[in-house]
Amino acid sequence: MGPPDGGRPNPTRKITDWKECRPRLKIDTPPLNSIPDNIRTTDEIDSAIGALTNHIRTVEKCEREVPASSDRRKFPPDILELIRAKNKALRRASAYPTPEYRSRAWALQREVKARVQEFRNECWSDLMEEIRPSHKAFWSVTKALKSEGYTPIPPLKRLDGSTALDDAEVAECLADSIETQCSHVSPPHDPAHISRIEEEVLQKPPSNRKTI
Image 1 (tube, rainbow, N blue to C red):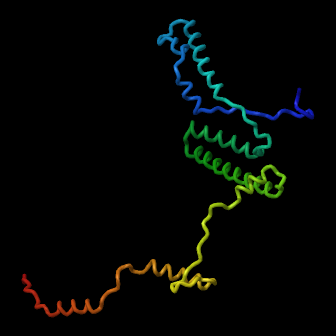
Image 2: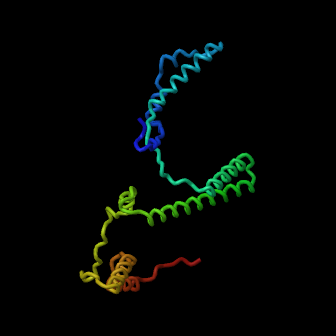
Image 3: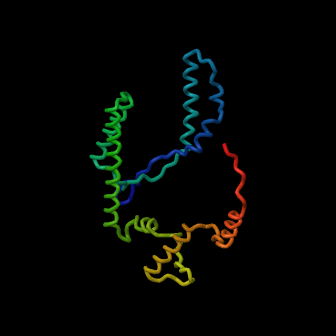
């Protein structure tokens, strides 16, 4: 029986789990071990090709089908044309690395990046305009935009311990904090101690200096 209401089945695509595939390809199997080190005849070539093909087919066991994205937005023709021109310019610059070709390739790369970003912004704006609670992406967007895990800023305290309420008091608190952080951290000087040291230095007789 076909799908109900004459509709088409949901499209699917295959994806490969390469983490699971790599160790399977490294496992020795009897067909692989039967391949001689020195292949001389055409029969040995055919046998080796068959053994290697059977071994590589183990990758199919690492594949699984997932639903294909049927409503995925495609790039418009102008972006596809830009991408083709960019790829062509990159191949030309790789084959003939002249300053002119490289400059052209870099310019096209920047143009493609800007155009793709512009297209994505347009798609996002369209989605924000047309989205409704019944839209399947509504709750995903809500979850993405929801603010979670933020740390609230505590109220600012003045030097006397009171809370800064208005903008002027907040600005004063910030100014006091900056002044405290930028002030000298060493203890204040003792003027009396400095005065005693100066008096002792003045009372000492001058040292005998050698004249040249």
